[in-house]
Amino acid sequence: MSALAWASVAVFLAAYTLIASEKIHRVAAALGGAGIMLLIHATGAEAAFFSEDAGIDWNVIFLLLGMMVIVGVLKETGVFEYLAIWAAKRARGRPFRLMVLLVVITALASALLDNVTTVLLIAPVTFLVCERLAVNAAPFLIAEAMASNIGGAATLVGDPPNIIIASRGGLSFNDFLIHMAPMIVVLMAVFIGLCWLMFGRSFRYDPERAEEVMALDEREAIADRRLLWQSLAVLALVMAAFVLHPVLHYEPSIVALLGAGVLVAVTKIRTEQAIAEVEWPTLVFFAGLFVMVGALVETGVIGALSETAVAATAGQPELTTMGLLGASAVLSAIVDNIPYVATMSPIVEQLVQAGGDQVLWWALAFGADLGGNATAVGAAANVVVLGIAARNGTPISFWQFTKYGLVVTVVTVVLVAPYLWLRYLV
Image (spheres, rainbow, N blue to C red):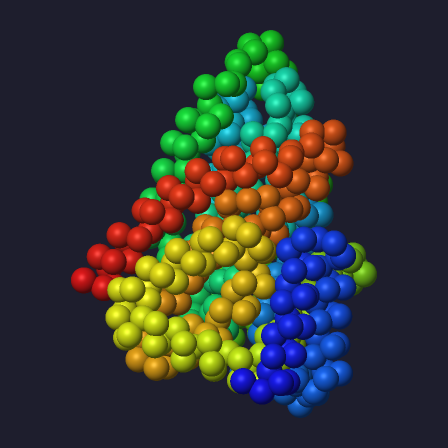
């Protein structure tokens, strides 16, 4: 490789290290790395902003933007608080039953919405219910973070790495439903069993506290019924358009933006309110990351890595698939799975173009999404949950999360391996 290629690798690794170590804010690290890549001419404005292969993936940016606006409006209705209280009453105040219901709600919501947004809305309500039941909220929060990562893996919009994979691999919303969702249902059933082994036996049932929870009226949580029905109608139309992509031929980003625009236009929510709920730092982080990865493409680094990977696997699809699954799980446990997938997706794209099968995309998705559960920094949802826990006086340490996360990741990844083998390679 050229001197410029080595320089771009050095810049990327430095930024990646700062992101992983959290020495400085990840947005600053991504923007700084992108700026240096432009400064040393590893990439240019034309490639960074307009190239399909080496530039900012605007489909990803605008899909996230549209879904964040929709969720921001939904938040104003109180529907998430309603679901949490409903779950507590259906569990009749029994802690493990409550955990199962909250975990299932979190997984389903994460499949339809962004998993980070889901935990942001579910976690505060979890504190309310756990306080009523006089139980420690930490196990619930840990379980919800992991459920959001597992459930989010089922769909294109559920987990940010899936959005990147879909955009790079030309995969549709239905592709994820067909190839990812069936196994995710199995993994969620296994995960509930793991929750019992890890947490369930330590819970204590308090009849008096349970009666207090039963006295709550979940209907009081709904702040605006008209807004709720409007929001649910628009969300249903957006999800239907995702599913009908092969017929309608509208990209998910366009559907999400149209849905967000319609929702803001037809409701009484002010534009400022809707925009205020957008996670702008996340979108800027993505943009910086795409510029850095694009520089690696422009300087030939990605091409060299893909050629090395093809040579190492000697054209053996089984070895490539299982190696990618395992490596993705391990590396996503060490660093956030978003920058990992942004880096790996161009390599996987070239492997697929060189004669590989689409199973490589599913190996990457499963490995990255499930590997994110292994440590407290493996996925953005984990970091968000730990932050909420600390602000509410129930700090969860890195190792408290990780000792459970490693178990869940090992079990789920081991189960995915035979699924990929039997469905795609035999």
